[in-house]
Length: 335
Image (cartoon, rainbow, N blue to C red):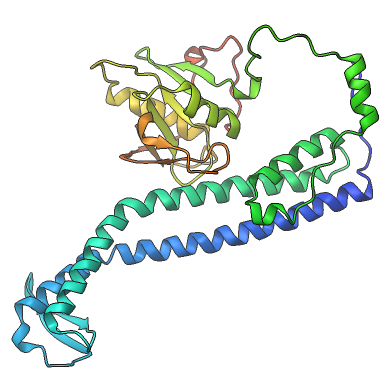
């Protein structure tokens, strides 16, 4: 079988890879700043109880609050032996300052529900871009074919936001002569049936000890196909927290039948194995119903946010051969 010769990349190809890597690094820096901002929002959201107690103290000890004070120290209504130092807006009355603190406490409570999924989405994107950057660095090597290099470049381009995409080089397309030759020598057959699903989109298929079917994505595109095209709303959806890894779906379907705690722990351990945390000790694995998993608008393949999730601490475990439902037993690491 003829294979493409492996020759050193031409200077312009190396320059293209280097330029794409520089643009990808800019995206990484932006994502790091976004993560810091979300962490700041999370820290503020965690002060909700502090704001609520300060508002309660103001209302309980109004007579001790001097007029136009910028700061006041009052007993804690929950523990009078402790005091609370409260910053005030001098333009507002004590009651209005208390109302403002209660409003901040309510906003913090809403933030505690909304911010963690945002943080997970940003961290997942950071991990994905880190993987792409490593692939780009490897694509500059002499043992990489031109077609493989072009594929990595195309994936990196797709991962960039529109503003940065305009700064990146376009992957080189085939020349008109090459395209014409392909059209002559490999004519496309007439399509009478839908095209077969590409191998990279086909998930691993396993079965738990108690007989539940489990599907595991192999790539970012495979994760996307599994979650948004194969999984049903009532299926259970798993993903390791804080790291890149496979989307994992436990087939449940309709009805009252529920997987046992043992099955959930078994699937969580497989989820941890097919992730970047496979060499860690116990790692957090989140799970929820698939109907609570969605892809943000314009998000890249494999990036999702979820709601109503629960967490299982699981030790990464490679599925035994007896669990493999595929005809080919593929035990590679998750992408």
